[in-house]
Image 1 (cartoon, chains in turn orange, blue):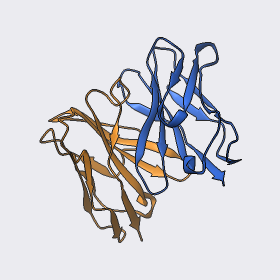
Image 2 (cartoon, each protein chain N blue to C red; image 1 turned 180 degrees about the vertical axis):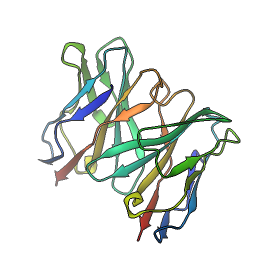
Image 3 (cartoon, rainbow over the protein chains, first blue to last red; image 1 turned 90 degrees about the horizontal axis):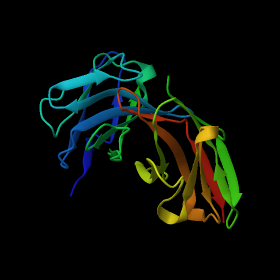
Amino acid sequence: NAGVTQTPKFQVLKTGQSMTLQCAQDMNHEYMSWYRQDPGMGLRLIHYSVGAGITDQGEVPNGYNVSRSTTEDFPLRLLSAAPSQTSVYFCASSYSTGGGRSPLHFGNGTRLTVT
Amino acid sequence: AQSVSQHNHHVILSEAASLELGCNYSYGGTVNLFWYVQYPGQHLQLLLKYFSGDPLVKGIKGFEAEFIKSKFSFNLRKPSVQWSDTAEYFCALGGGSQGNLIFGKGTKLSVKP
């Protein structure tokens, strides 16, 4: 049982480059989300999805795009990387909403450095 | 607007000491409250949760938390910490119209052997 799988684990980008962080879950969860974790800032919600074909913005969406074409996958795209996007990114999923009664299941994270 | 405040940024304890980590939230509606733990180099894992009923909830590894509605608090406690409890602890609030989870900034716990 894989749970939530994120790839890659580490990535270094130059300013202006684009890339996609992959996230897949095999638990048939409707809700998926992306958080970024920065020292002293906790986790901040970037984008979330309550089901295939439905996405919405979180607290810090600028510079990121998402799509949800299937229940399993929820990729996060950085359109033009900036040093301010250096962070650890976590994908998380749950049966219902993120703050509801079913807990979030987290992936192992992607550590992104933008130079 | 919903928010979560964790009072301590970094707590250092010796093994066998008692632990209490503070968490206060701001939200006027029905809340779901969570504590997550992140061990070094790992992802977040659920420690315990409160939805309703008994305000004292017990989680894994001997942790417990008490929901005090009048104080908008959900403090995490453990009677006797171990070196293996060294981790970062996040309080989180669920609820509101969008139903997303709002995290506090985290408290780093270092336990000296």
